[in-house]
Length: 265
Ligand SMILES: NC(=O)C1=CN([C@@H]2O[C@H](COP(=O)(O)OP(=O)(O)OC[C@H]3O[C@@H](n4cnc5c(N)ncnc54)[C@H](OP(=O)(O)O)[C@@H]3O)[C@@H](O)[C@H]2O)C=CC1
Ligand SMILES: O=C(O)[C@@H]1CCC=N1
Image (cartoon, rainbow, N blue to C red; front, side, top):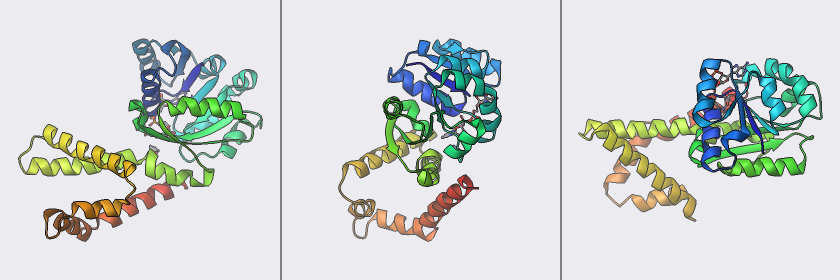
């Protein structure tokens, strides 16, 4: 399977790392191009990928093309690659936040281009990602299934209605940053009490990792799991109530609300 990347920034590099690690594709099957030669050429050389001279060359060589640029770049780039798209007809996987399938179709002005809208997160780099996907009417079942298989090599995949994409952006696309923020806050407190930052980050990150695994493995709700940790009269309930007094849940909900609103602007 030949896979292309238009844009080779943070998200594309996370996807490529995960794909290579899972051996879902080899370097010789990956074709890339980005705005600056000084960025994409050394990267291609490092991982033995094909560095293409322009975006159309990526399209011409690929069966599946990831659009991995900032959302505002979508219109001009789709206009630029339109002739190559119409000739080669690859599946276009768009990870552009907030850009609907109908907008992608309108940018190209042709209804028979197969689009798959996806929302991955950075954890695809270690094959622990979460990726939502939805195809347009032109996308064949065969191509949807092949793309889903490719993305499944990077972690969990979820077929999702487009109306729920903004919620997914907040809970999965953006949320790694929120979880890192929480880990960093815990680690800073560890440093306050004398741990080194390295020790504190490792302890906090392992606690988050184990707790997330426990939520997924357990039949209990997160609230029931909280109750299991809170010994009567113990340390945890005191800390938990102090966090809530400081507005922990409100802060999280507010952050998610604002993320969703921003995606829908
Ligand atoms: N970061 C994340 O966690 C997630 C991001 N997304 C979405 O993924 C997309 C990319 O985000 P991210 O990787 O973070 O952004 P980056 O800013 O890291 O990368 C953007 C890339 O676009 C390239 N680019 C700009 N203009 C062009 C052009 N005309 N032709 C080809 N390439 C071009 C840049 O090239 P160069 O490097 O040479 O300047 C760069 O490689 C966004 O739409 C974002 O919404 C979705 C889910 C999660
Ligand atoms: O911050 C952003 O806009 C993108 C969407 C999900 C993660 N990063």
